[in-house]
Length: 338
Image 1 (cartoon, one colour):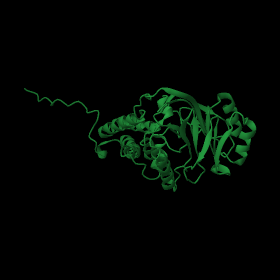
Image 2 (cartoon, one colour):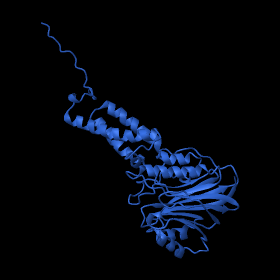
Image 3 (cartoon, rainbow, N blue to C red):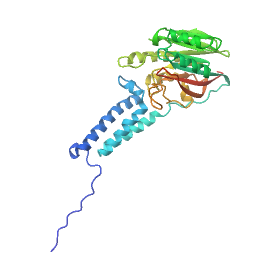
Image 4 (cartoon, rainbow, N blue to C red):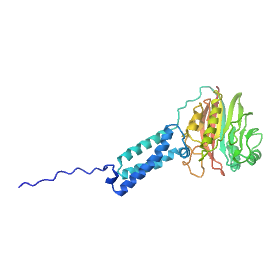
């Protein structure tokens, strides 16, 4: 008597059909959570790829683009746990896109002309002048040739006058006065006042005489991209771009608190005029300068020293001054003869 044999059973698919009705509740919850995380990260990444800062909250999140790796990795794990194949592919693509944009932007060579002069540049936001005593100590220690100070009110400027000998920094150009409005450029090389970029906060300009070469100087301090203030932030960064574009190749240093990172389209448009980020040249394009409340490597690099291709950058340091939410940027530059 023959016995009927049961047909062989197919091995269980470790990634069953994506239909939510076929999954246990915990799988569905994991897949939905992964989808929400990926949708948010993808929206910001899409704006980065489209070269736009869009609207709130995209500009604010773009400042911390590298840290979107955390929700993307979490989404990958949740998609794996929820056995959601589409989500796995989506998460891998998002992680690849983030990794691509985390790479330093642009490839820059050395200047062609012979070296003319070494310049040490320091840019610091002293937060309503509270960081002025720490700035005085840093300047005394590191002896920069050019100092760009944002949010330096009248009391802060008095502290700098008292703490730094006039013989060391005889040349000063200031703009604004009270609170965050005040800014000042100090120099141990001759300065001639120039028309600064107009903005909500003081942004002085000058021309420095560096061994007979006129170097344009401009302090940058546009308003931050707060909710409701993105248009003003974009406009003031655009004014800084216009200043950079008007240089016609003349040696230029544009430094300060830009309230923007390399992941903001409005900032990259300034670089598009031919300026280079000196921290990038020195291999430190992602070192955070704000906020000091977060330990390194967390935070965002929103303070920059931008230069024309006449300058080479050798070393970048980021100084904690105390009593300010920004780290100061210290760059060693070499001006090459045009």
